[in-house]
Length: 170
Image (cartoon, rainbow, N blue to C red; front, side):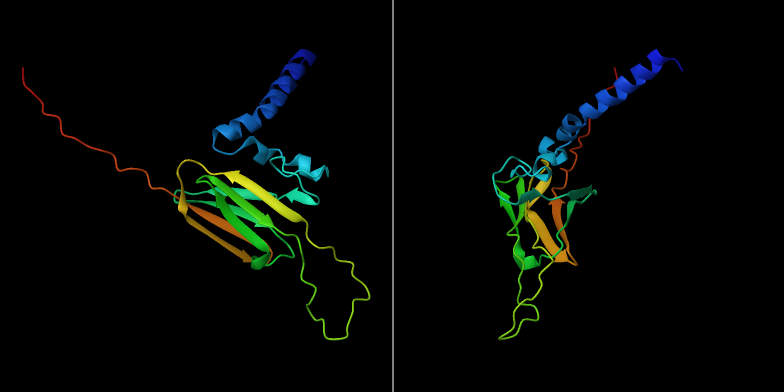
């Protein structure tokens, strides 16, 4: 393969990668969902540019089946009471946590910590624009073993209308 062919192939591949966020946004996912790097660089901004100290965007897996969308987020150290799942308007799913860890596990009257090396979980914030066929009335969430699973049901597609057309003989 020649150098010119290698360069053209490389330019084509890089061009496709640069258009990935726009492609995903056309599929119903906000471009910010594929660009969580701002929060990881420590600039104090969340996935959609929200201000907040210690705020980080939550890495998420989003699955789609014929009946529902499933969001899976790792939330180690948090219990279900630490996490809030809300809906802004009809189509913005918001998942957030306070980032506080309870320290009363095993603590008795008159006891104090001598060493505390485990850090508290960071505050989480994830905002997700739901696709048009997502049902805002069919949302469930469960937190088990440090994994939050949010299931959003889909609105069933309308039944296709059929009509009989009379065939005339000419």
